[in-house]
Length: 108
Image (cartoon, rainbow, N blue to C red; front, side):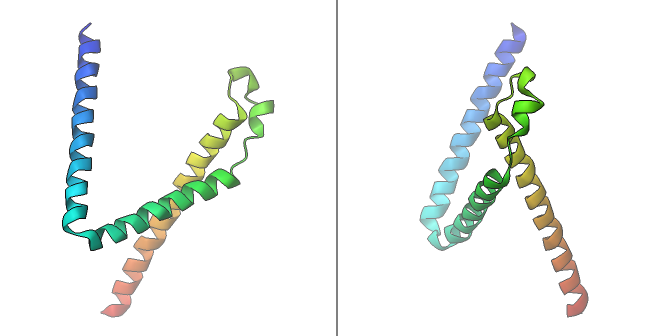
């Protein structure tokens, strides 16, 4: 009983936080519409990465290896998309870090 109550309170607090984040984000976009452009570029880039990794992921192993566990081809494809997105974003972060460090090295 106590665990259920704690979970419900957590859900309510998360909902309040999400509403607050969305509200303050909308206020910031209204005050500074030029700043929203860079955020929009990031969001579009993330959607492109999701789309590319979904198209490139293969769910054919679900029919042979994981069929007895109830994993469908769609589920396998989504898991592959998640892993591919993780790999792409990790590689992008490493390249960005290396670029910043190398550019600092040569700018001094």
